[in-house]
Length: 358
Image (tube, rainbow, N blue to C red):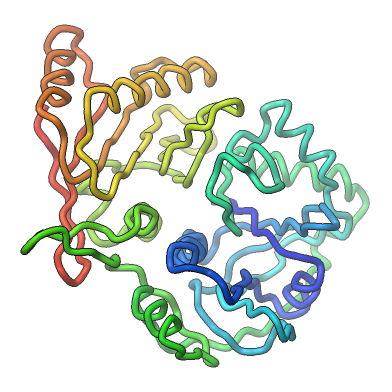
């Protein structure tokens, strides 16, 4: 997996010197934004490759590799009195590219369709603003090749070396967020675990996810780490890559919450799962028709057969009319383009899933 991490010039100098990435925490963030940054961070795994896009200077730096689990630390490493950078991971440099890629070159790659998981490297008004975004392996290789073009005579092995201490403690994400919201400060690093979600009680004995992005983030975290039995529950075995908030087309506002790609070796993907999540909504036939329309558009834009794409809708409930629509489509047209999965969560945030028979 490849990722692009966003930074600013001052923070990037410190990051590159220490081999530590930090996403900013401001004093006026609400809990939804806090959760969003945690979700960004836990998208990374040790061994993932990362590029760093430095805003203001508008250039992309590479190539690096994640060397730690994501962690939270509010010490003064980034030497800023007004802002902290506690959403962190450690990295190593694996290829030395002293000449970064300018944003003009990146814009060409987006326009030519070589980069399609990201529509802009500036703030995207159609997406939740995030400090970290995912790329497919194909897109990552395109950027590596572009770096070679800008660094034709460089010794790629002349990399910076870092010595990172071990991080001993692990804490559940919700505990960290609650503690920080109550005024606690984490001066020592703690690894972030994401095995439960914040909940709100709707009625006696019935709970749902408090934030939609926390449900999405829990699923993504579990897919990437192959944990919590989520791969089996959602039946997305054998996927090779997964990304969050992927645009179906550059001109469209619709983005899949999670996109899973399936491929063998270096071949092009041969199947896609588009996963949509709703924290507490009864899904209607109109919702299904809209999703199928987007799937057809994506199929056409990628030049792949429609039967090589499936939709996966996850929510608390589905209208009977919507279920009947899919059953009729399966019986008459011999296709089942969308799978429906109910999710359940208990009072301590443990999540389970139950597929609906079509």
